[in-house]
Length: 108
Image (cartoon, rainbow, N blue to C red; front, side, top):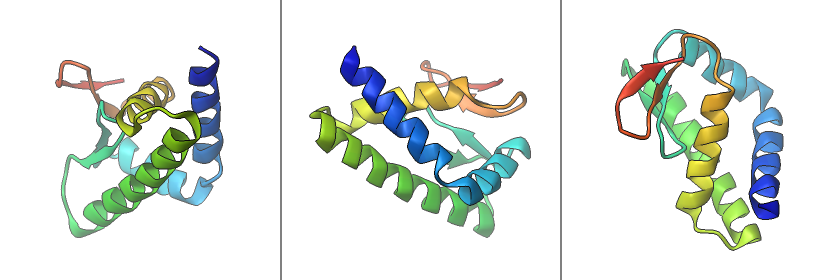
């Protein structure tokens, strides 16, 4: 339990530490251009060159952070990513799209 809280706290600090990226991502979410997947990564819902570049950038940064947290806590990266996904979805603004654990797309 303590390890889970540390992972979530560290992830929250990471997400808060990149406000410029968060604003771009926030805008893309609000416009329905991207959605949060259940695996902790984003996907393009309305693909374009700009959206694809944003998705690649966000996912690369998340993967690096998940790997860092995984190494620090001795948990597999996919476990860290799924824990992050739960936290991210919990903090989404109304109208944002996310993938449920059953694979279906939902709107918050």
